[in-house]
Structure formats: C-alpha cells, structure tokens
Length: 307
Ligand SMILES: [Zn+2]
Image 1 (cartoon, rainbow, N blue to C red):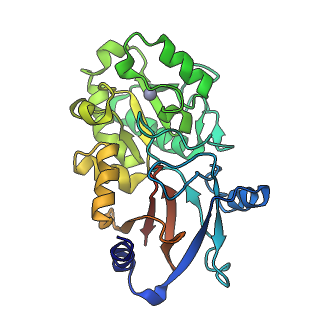
Image 2: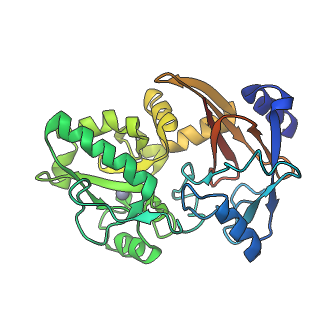
C-alpha cells in the first residue's frame, strides 16, 4: 500500500527532484520536541496533534516535526495546522487548541457572552462572513458558542434533552476552537432552519472556509441532527470542495483517503491537495510554493499546496 501512495503523492506534486522529506519522529514527546513543534507552527498557535501508525491516534504519544538533514532552510516556512482534524463520535479530540484562541471584538463579531472565544483564523473567516451578511441582508449574526473546554462540553452534553444535537465530552468540534454556532439576532433556534438567513449561510459560508458541518441530508453519516447554526473552519479550498460535491466532512476525509488527493482551480489560484499516510515516518512536501499540513486525526495527513 505504501508504494502506490508515495507514487500518487509524487504525481500530484511533480517530479522527484522537487521534493524533500520531512520526517515525523513518532512516539517521542520530550519537552524539547514539543518546543520545536511549537516553533514550527507560528501561524496557527495550535499545538501539534498526536499521531501514530494506528488508525486511531493515541493523544498521549505526541510527535514533533523533524527536519531532514540539510533541509532546514527549505522547510523554514512549515506551518503544521490542525484545521482538517476530524472530530466526531468515532474520533476523539487529539488535544487542546493551545494559545490560538482569541476573543471576538464587538461589534465586528457579536457574541452572546463575554466568555466566547474562538481560534484566531476561524474568527477571521467568521468576521468576513458577517461583513458579507450585513451587505447582503442587513442582518446581524452572532456567535453563541465557540471554543468549549471539556468541562463545558460535558455540561452541554449532560444538559441536552435531545442527544442527537450534541457530542459527548472530547468528541465535540467546539473543543478544537474551530467551530462556531452562528445565530441571527431576532430569530430563535427553532425558527432558524426556515429563515432566508440560514439559507444564505449554507450557500455562502464556504467562501470563507467555513463548512456547514451537520447538513439535513447527512444525518446518517454525521450522526448529528441538522444544525443550520454549526459551522467548522476547514479552509477555503476544502470547504469549496465539500460544498460543490455535497459532501459532509466525514465523506470528504473518506474521499481523500480513497482518491489520495486532487487538483483544483479556485478564483485563479491552483490548488493541489494530497492525502498521505506517513511512510516510515515521512510525508512528501513540495519544495517550492505555499502549502500547509494538517493531520486528519485518523492517521493521515493532508498537504494543501497552492500557487
Ligand atoms: Zn455547535
């Protein structure tokens, strides 16, 4: 299985000479390694995800980015993100979001309580979405829930009369800091689904990298009832692909595992998305151009490159 994966990765990125290797040292979780991983992720502030060779990673195992000898200059721009981590009933949260959480600023992004925080990059996306909504409908959205601690998620779950709308502690996307429950001032939860604002959100959120995470027609796959308010930041090309192909996030990860990647143009930018399982601790990256890496929390890595 490994050789075809590698060949496919090479196919997506080009010829062998334009590659270099980034080694993942599996298992080790020393303080030094943790620090190095943190330094390699300045853009996101997210702590590194745990991976292992098993299908379900062990959060305690940890790993660090380890540069191949002589390649330190070439990989200085590495940003290891967790934007594509699958967190659901089957896949447990890999770790806390670290220091990337921010407090939304009123009135750009209204919130229901002062305690609301969310990951900074997700906030940027939500902020642009809200700006666009004001232009489109002169309506005001607000975030009712962003990041939740394990304890907060436990309270939500224990207090939910209908468990089909909630995940148990350590299985909620809210604990990643990358999810936002978005509501409309003046419209209650029960009335949201049939509002034109919810329709607008469903059709436009992808433009800002946000995915309607629990669509009405995917309940059988997500295991969660239709939530017109719950959006997850996954990045623009990925949200676009899901929207265009009517995929929920579970289906998208499965698609990537089977196809091992795709190429697409979006608004004049060319993207190459590659899905890879670490091959003897290595994944393949383009030597030039922009890219980011995210573990998917099921044992694979998604490399998103654009030019
Ligand atoms: Zn939610």
